[in-house]
Length: 122
Image: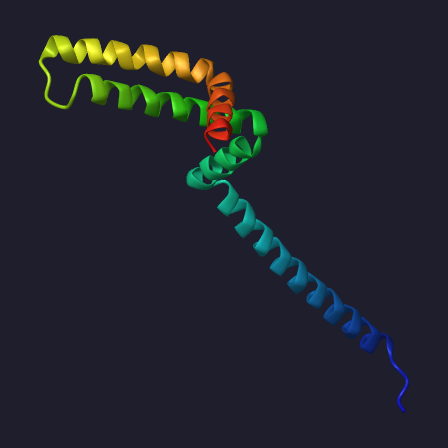
């Protein structure tokens, strides 16, 4: 077996450094791709929305507002109808706004009464 010369040791060290450089370049490219994907506007919006909807308080508020909006819309459609004159339509819009605000502000009490009604009914 031949003894390693300084040149051989230097070549081995160069090969190790080149492999390390290639590995680090690959990791850098992967991190760049991850960062690039996370900074896209659509992905920022999606991640922000996911963070917001995972918070219990905000999730509850969104649900309450959705219940209020749907209740107001249904109230307007039931009382005013689809084909109404402009005065009736204005009245329906004001009524929808009022019902939406009342239901969204008092949705916890409405839910409690609804649960009580269902439990008494069954």
